[in-house]
Image (cartoon, rainbow, N blue to C red; front, top):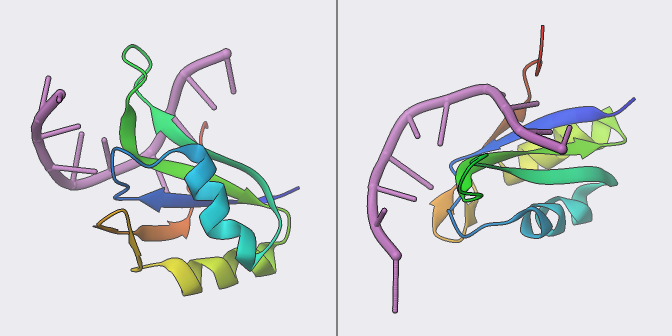
Length: 84
DNA sequence: GTTGAGCGTT
């Protein structure tokens, strides 16, 4: 299993690679992705990062929430369920 | 060549 983290208020120019690079120093990132518009492929301004360690995930949230990336103040928290 | 609240698409 892995812990899913929500990252909001991203700049439209921030991509998945940048997300992974941001979280990588705080733990092992199993996957990172910026959610894009299905039709245009443009960023929707938020994304998700999966961490292999729940503990590292929470530390990453604490360390990165509110920090600045690409001119935007990041809103980071545990992700909600994708589907029900 | 745009925009700004948000918890997702293969």
